Amino acid sequence: MTSFDGIARLLGRLGRGASLAARTALPVDTNPVPADWTHVTKVDPEDDKKLPLLYPLYLRHTSAVSVGGSADVTATNTEETFELLAPASVPVFHEPSGPRHVTPRTRARADLLAIPEVLNGDSESLVGQLGEATEYVREEMVPETLREKLPWLPAFAEDALADFATSWLLADAVFEAYVIQNPDSAAAREANVAESDLLAPREAKQRAMAAERHLESELLYLEYSGTFGGDEAVETLDAISDGLTWSRLWYGGGIDSRDRARAILDAGADTVVVGDAFHRVADEERELCQRAADALDPDASAAAVREWVGENVAVADSNAAAYLATIPGAPDPERLARRYLTATVRAWLCLRARREASGDERGSASGRSLRADLRRALGADLFDALAETDAALVRRNFAALLGTDEPADSDHITRRTDGSRPSADEAVATHLALALPP
View 1 (cartoon, one colour):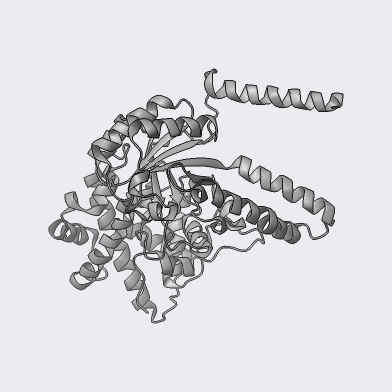
View 2 (cartoon, helix red, strand yellow; view 1 turned 135 degrees about the horizontal axis):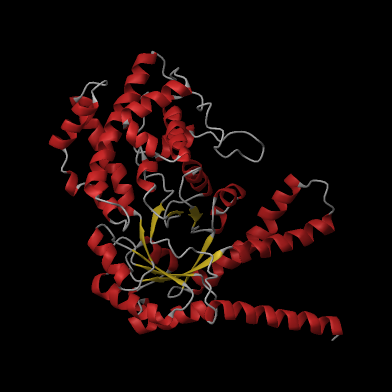
């Protein structure tokens, strides 16, 4: 061993020691997952899982948005989902359920890449897919990107750079260690988690401790996937929380009320993850707007729409109120739900009126008049309270529904690497719950 090798090894040990000290002994937080993310909304790219028409209104209350699902997810519908969420005013990260769901476009859009590892599944779900993903990134994704961006690069340099880029991507990602406790869920089927694989609280704690200290997982995710874990989940969270010092502890499954969200957070979870409750808002508003279209004139006033919603919707029991209630920081979920459902009906009526008035399936309104119509439909106070990016997102999606050009004042919408603007038409038509009739 040369003296240079010895120095390099010493520096490596010092670096590892400094990292361990920062995680365990020093009063600093080095976990790249923000500690103030108390609520994450999970958006499933599956074509059957729709988004509400005015989803930027709802998502402005959540801490972050996760893109990922366990069934019928592809690279294409994942990219489309990221298109629809760019540029939302909240962070958007990627939880891929398959290696090929990660593409250059999703990496460019995602604030974080969270790689799942199932602690109580089979070896494929723990290391097999990671190995497949590493091979895919090293031998396909990175070389293709390098050849596209740096066609002049010599082969020997391309190979070395591909090695570095692959290692950097994995080092830059966060690792998400799952404990799946619902054997009837799609997540359990994907990871081959059977009834016999479910963990007692102490077993879950032990595996969580190994994930934090050996696998260096930034996230520990207790997953009940579609069902509420109740007292069992509370006991397991309490045990896991007692064993962790650095990793974030997340819970997902059956959160559809403020009481359930609060119980999970009080049990030791850092974050509640909500997915189904959000997608149910989209299902609800589809039926609501169909009823409103039959009962109200396209130019119905704000007062008339509010009155109709008040008489025809049990807002306190609505999916909109249920989703908003899961967000600890959302003030008065019922009041917000009433405002958002009313705004959705008015915006939908506005879209139908514009389509009918144009006399042309593709519409003809300018971006400026569309903005004015949306401001009137949503209400000046609500529209003006939106972040600039969220307001632009609403206009872009409505322009896509109408088939008009993208609004001219949305320059801050992220461009593709070739300088062109993203087209939202196809993604909007596929993933929004409400689409204009031809």
